[in-house]
Image 1 (tube, rainbow over the protein chains, first blue to last red):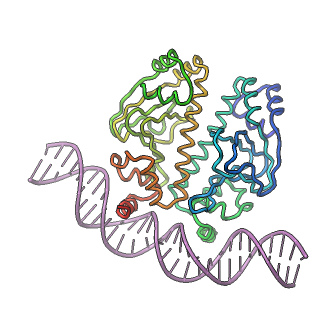
Image 2: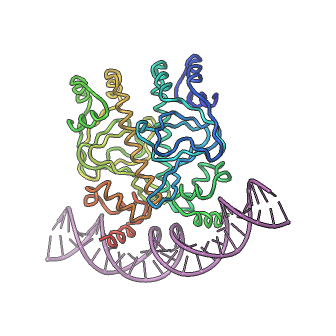
Image 3: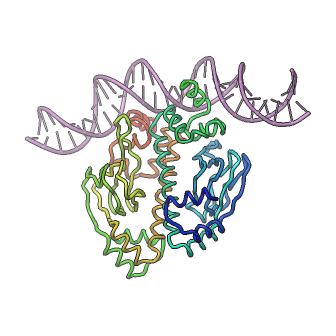
Length: 186
Length: 186
DNA sequence: AACAATGTTTACCATTTGGTAAAAAGCAAT
DNA sequence: ATTGCTTTTTACCAAATGGTAAACATTGTT
């Protein structure tokens, strides 16, 4: 929980009382490897802070292949901009995870009580989403080897913990190609 | 101006007085084809509504190539999440454009006067950025022909107005490849 | 009309990536 | 240790894309 508060404080000031309130409104849950946090078709309107572990967000393309859209690793806060539409993606723990959750309802209470809560949260979410976009952008204009090297820089702790196929689909290549690339690099 | 108001009203209610206030705080500017709206290195902290025409947002990669990151076409409202950092991208009109601008200062005044202005704006910007991300995501996992067809669907009116090279770099391929793809399609 | 400048297409071959299949390696359970 | 299951690597060839250069088309200027 402290980690989340610390993370939030980077984006705006909060006094002790406010911090306490946020802690009260947040719940900690654990997920085992391969558990789903939310599945496609369900609503997802919580705020999630990844305290430990890594989630992946993936969907199925028209050929039925799993496409990993991105990874949410530790110290990462995110939510769903389309709170009232069913998800089209799966959020799955790919390692054991500790998540801190603030429900929509509690979120609204915080919003009414803490003056700049909305502003802080918007900064965080906007930043997160822009980072994801930038990362995704760079995936389009580079070749697969460069993309993999960039991935390694961004997620140095992931490569040994997640299946090759997740990374391959994230990079937009087959796992055979990724295996070949790995070989050429070393 | 009416177009912008109409667009904003999709995301929240405003009374006549509020609409009038927004109109007062917004300025209309025109750009000729190939003019720059903002260049890399400058600050960009306005809110922009593309009333007529198309902008492209591009940057230079490590090989000095222009990479078109996305296109902002008509009826599109956007801003810069990193208001206090110099831009790394160029925003260029690729057709004659009419833009409606709200400066940072005026934006803050609106924020103080119109209660749900922040909330409305956040909805719009969040939605815009998520759309861009989704579009970009699909660019990673599909082959170049599919990507081009998707581009045609998303921007049907662009294809005849912008250089091939812009589209090619947006799709992450060379212009020769795009030319070949065009030939194969027809 | 002639010219230059720019944008687009084509051609050639090299390189990268995909698709299929098999082999090898890793892992869990017994 | 053996078995069965999953993941990763390799190999082979096909297909897609890149790189270079030239031809062709378009546009604007004089």
